[in-house]
Amino acid sequence: MHSMCLSATLSLSVTRTHSRTTLYLINMQSVEGRQIEEVVSSVFHTLLLHRTLGKFHYKQEGSYSIGTVGVVDVDCDFLDFTYVRAASDDLDSYIQKEVNVFRDTLREGPGCGQISLEFYQKKRARWPFMAECIPWEVWTVKLDTLTLANENERQVCREKLGEMLAEKVMHVAEAMNRHDYVPKMPNQSELDLIFDTSYRDVQPYLFKIAHQTTGPNPTSVGTTMRKLLKDTLALDL
Image 1: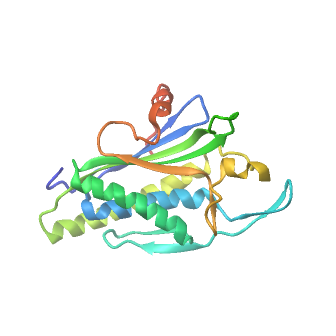
Image 2: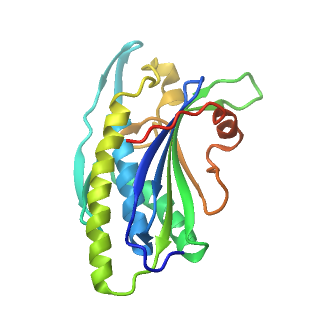
């Protein structure tokens, strides 16, 4: 855990593989413990805003309409930053629950760790086997915490981190808009293989969140991630 470093840095690297999976790593340093929740939430909600649709309404097989997704501005308390999230209280509650567990674990543990948001699709398997989960986009935020000596240092860190986060959230949005693979729109019978239909007001692509405070790889990816990392392209944005 750092004690005086105010030179917070944030970089975005991309790993492309021969499969249809793209891995993104956002490296962050010098984050106060109280800023962890807002840093991760701002990134994850930005991602989900681009990976969430309104509810599907089918008239008949192959014919459907898609509802709208409202948005909410969120002003951070410990960063000079405002982000936009989908206007779904249920989705927000789930994200906050997962992020808070990571925050608490990080603050009580070694002070460094990573948390991943993985988008995946399901492939049906023959009975009695369960459906296979195939990741197609994985975002990992890696950070470590610092302790600041006084309020002046906190204010400097707050402003600097807010500026960098705003810049990188824009890069995240640009990266998602030029991504070369998103699962095709499914038929009604296959909707739950691509989208999470459990939310009342929105329909995000299937996703899961996992974190760890030690080791190089996020638990959400596991063995699949280790295989995919054989072919890597680093891209600094």
